[in-house]
View 1 (cartoon, one colour):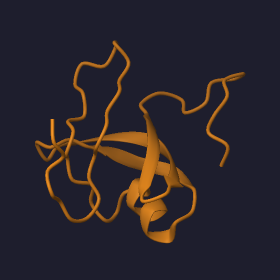
View 2 (cartoon, one colour):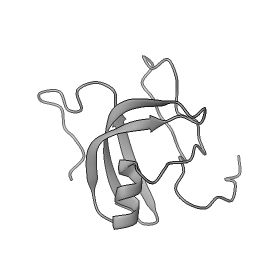
View 3 (cartoon, rainbow, N blue to C red):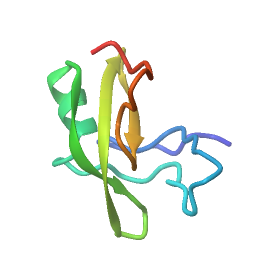
Length: 92
């Protein structure tokens, strides 16, 4: 599927645990108060409490780790404890 022309930050690729009831849709816009936007604008790693930006306009609280990669930002959104004991995380 061709990527639509958009301005600003939006979701491009999505992966989710099979346990998730609702999945974040591709091309969902990411608002300016999100950790992903902070990492994208500042061009630096960011992490913190934020929300899942569902296209419907509803938001679910989560924890996010974001890392700029060229013109993109890679991010992981956690619904549970962000890093359980012994689990590796992104090198921020």
